Length: 342
Ligand code: GCU
Image (cartoon, rainbow, N blue to C red; front, side):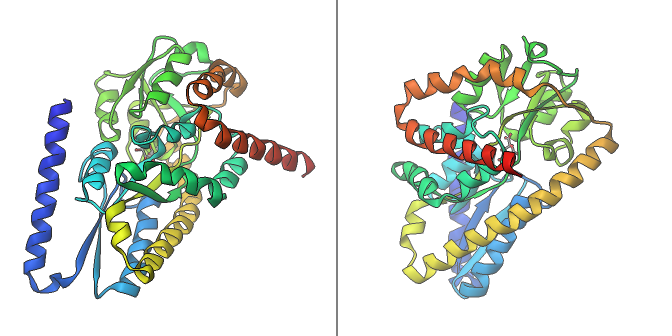
């Protein structure tokens, strides 16, 4: 599988390179093509954010750059797309924090279950650019860097049979994003972790290769997982953001003025995505209900207690994470104090 994956990355890189060369030979092609890949549908907030990105870049620098967005994982699942971004065959990729763990272990922070105690604390953390910039720089040695983040809500379990307590997870085969922390989390839940690419989940569920998965509500509707796993349990185990990742060589090749345009476009994409996210989640809940999805509201603490020891374990193994972790804990406390006041 690994060899096939590598070959695919090589072949896609080559094909992309060819289209660049062809484009350079044609008339419109004095423009540099900027390729952006993501695994969501064209109605997804990530895509809408990137349309705003494209609009801004082309309004300011349209004589020089032609921004093309490839949705639906057309150029591969996040893992392969990130490898293509590393080689420079893609300029930008949207990937979940979980996919970045293999490039920098700092990103495993975001997959720690119950790291954020509330959405408020999540937003405070993600808006703290002093903190996030330090994290974003940790993949520089791999030739990629995060330029902004996108809301991806909270991740919850969904399955064929209802999960009401953590004990129900015992022995179940649950799909996770390919990442060591996600696998460790499922072990802590006594379930069996099955790492798979996003696009493989529907088939795996319908063929019974897995018993369930975990994701935000949009997976139920956009990806139609609700058709085959109609019990959605709000255990809220993670808030894992998506990130917009850039090829560092490309990013560094930009002049200061151009860089300012691309950076501003990334900021706009973040703002648009966050507004669209809120609307999309409300719609997805209604649509999922119509599809026959049954929402379960369990005792979240029971789930939390089972996996909290993972924090200590991972911090002991990776002490570099401690300063970020402490800062996020402070945000958790501040957010809790604010909620108490209001
Ligand atoms: C979410 C997230 C994606 C991720 C997917 C997954 O949809 O936004 O970036 O790839 O979950 O579980 O693979």
